[in-house]
Every structure is written in C-alpha cells, then in structure tokens.
Length: 413
Ligand SMILES: Nc1ncnc2c1ncn2[C@@H]1O[C@H](COP(=O)(O)OP(=O)(O)OP(=O)(O)O)[C@@H](O)[C@H]1O
Ligand SMILES: [Mg+2]
Image (tube, rainbow, N blue to C red):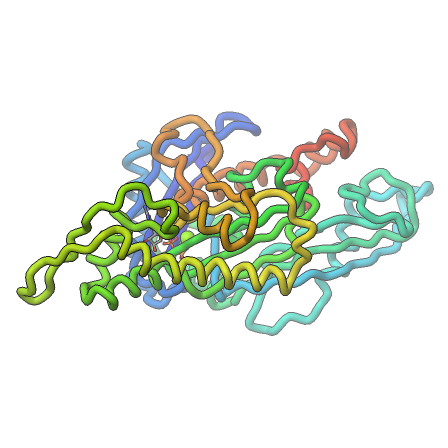
C-alpha cells in the first residue's frame, strides 16, 4: 500500500510502531499502533541482530493487524552514542548563468550547503542531516530563505548530524531481514520535535529532552532551527537499577514498582502510600513508603537533568533559550518529572511533549512515550511535500508568519 507512513521506534526498552494514513498532503491520520518490549539493544544501539529482528517483525505485524493494512516499508530513527553533531559554515558565489540579475535559486542554496558539508568526517561515519540554520546574502545575515533575493555571495550556517555507518547498516539490515524496506533514518529528537513542538516556543529557543531507558537525547533549538544535539548514555534503566540494588530485588520487580508508584520530586508526592517490595528467594515481602522510594529515584533523575544542563551550558548560550523545555520519552511519564526539571533548570517553562493530535486513535498515542513513532510519521509526511511546491508557496507568502514546520521542511530538504 502506498498511502501509509510507518514510524518504527527501536528503543532500548520498547519497540513502538505507528501507522499513519496519508489523507492528503497536509493530513495524516493514525490508524494503528503497537508496542512490545525490545530485545537486542543496549543504550540505544543494536547489539544482538537476531533478537532485534524478531522484536521488530513482531511489533510491525501487531501494528499491521491493529490498523488492518499491510506494511511494506517504514522509517526509523537513531540517537544515543551513535550520533555526533557540530555546526558548520558554507559559502557559494551566486551563479549568473541562467539568472543575469543574480537572483538566488535552489542550485545556489545547494552549492552553499555542499560547501558547508565539505568538512572531513571519519570514514566510519556518514551524514544523517545537514540542517541550514540561516543564510547571509552579501553580508546581510539572519535570512531564513534566500530564494529570489539578489546577491553575489551566499553564506549559510548549518547544523550537521553524523551517525556511525555501522549503526545505520545494522538498522537497515534488521529492518530488511524483518521483511520491510527502510525509507529513511532520522535523528530521534529531530523527528520528535516535529510532532510535539509549537512554533512560538521554537522561535524563542527551546530544549527537547527525550528521557529514554538507555539514553537521554537532547535537541536545542535557537531561532527556530537546531543548534545542538547531544546524547547522554544514561536513562531510566539506571533509576531502576538503583531501586533494584537498594531494595535487593530483581530489575523487573524494581521496574514495576518504579512505574506503579515512583515519583522523582519529593514536594510533588501527593499521598505517601505503602509499596509492597516483593521478597526474593523465600524472603517475606516488605513494605516501603513512596517517600522512601522517591528518595532513591530523585537523586538519579536530578543527576540526569544536571548532566543535560551542564552539557547545554557548555555548548550553547542559555540566554537565547526563552521558550520551553519539552520532556518526551517514557521517563517523562514519571510523577514529579516536570517539577524536578523546573527545579534543576531554574525555570517554570517546562512541559510534557505530547504528540500533536492527528486524528484516528488519539487516546492511545497522545503520550510522551509515543513522541518518536508519531514524530516519524509527521516528519515523513512533511517530506512528501515536494520542495517545488513548498518553495512556490513560500515565495508567494514571504518569510513572515511562516510556520515553524514549513521552515523546517524547507531547511531539511
Ligand atoms: N509511568 C512511568 N513512570 C516512570 N517511568 C516510566 C514510566 N513509563 C516508562 N517509564 C520509564 O521510561 C523508560 C523507557 O522510556 P522509553 O520507552 O522512551 O525508552 P526507549 O525508547 O525504549 O529507550 P531509548 O530511547 O533510551 O533507547 C524506562 O526507564 C521506564 O522505566
Ligand atoms: Mg526512545
């Protein structure tokens, strides 16, 4: 079938699939979802191909059944330590071959971008995204789209994301051996932001934090474009580990207790109920208070947010971030997470990243944990818009009032 867009999120703890039906070029409706525990991954990387293939195949088949469609291809995303990013600068002389008045066209933009990516990257890495942040025409900076402007010198500032070739090959190999073709691999956070972010907060400068099981991935947006993407190799699994060690119980039991009764910010804990800690090896069950549990969880979650904060402070100017901190991933579903992030970052501008409403089975996917799968569907839908059509629409409407998503599409493709 040709009108389905399938987003496959291969996470450390869970695999999720979202199937969207393309109604028209602007509308996609979610028809089916599936989620199952992941296998064969460690800290966001595939470490056991056979196990990962089985898990991917099972989840896509389950989503196919739920949506009542047959899936042929999908898009997926990667993050974690497989990703590196940096900012670069490109320059091109505006060609006057077909444009005697030196009006900037797509080919000039392409040459400027080509020059920005002409940096040496190690042989074992490949470009995942080259996102233009803005353009400068003959010394005038801050231009979001230079098409049809007159000039002789076109410069661009770009954000470049590279990925490990092996990681990409592993993903391709798993998906194709599961029986599907893979159309594109996105940076996780870049896909997510297209479904959870609002235009105004991105123009003001915002941070997206994906609280996963194995990794915490971060994307910083300034002036409506990415300026920094990074990943910290720790996530919710570490919190579960702490509970498991302190309470002397298996990881799976600690995970259940964390999800059922965990809170990561003491002042946000409403009622202080008793939690049953299962006995191991014939040991009797014990009781612990939620308050006690929170005292185990909070320091680790605080540490994760502090690591994110110090990385961001090193790499960007916090003064330019007056929008929101947007929390996605399963970890964003923990009680007290918004309050804790507010406390660590010293701002009230923190919110949960709930995927936008696309119609269809809304109540099932409008949760932070579905941000990647739904983000992939939205990102891929946006890509289907032909660059020609987008360029024409933009040239007639001008840059003012242009939506973030439109800017984003233009920048990405
Ligand atoms: N309701 C909840 N309360 C607390 N924590 C939760 C809740 N739901 C999920 N989590 C935690 O979120 C983490 C899983 O998040 P998610 O499913 O986004 O990770 P993943 O995508 O599988 O992993 P990664 O992105 O790191 O590869 C786990 O640590 C899990 O314990
Ligand atoms: Mg994830």
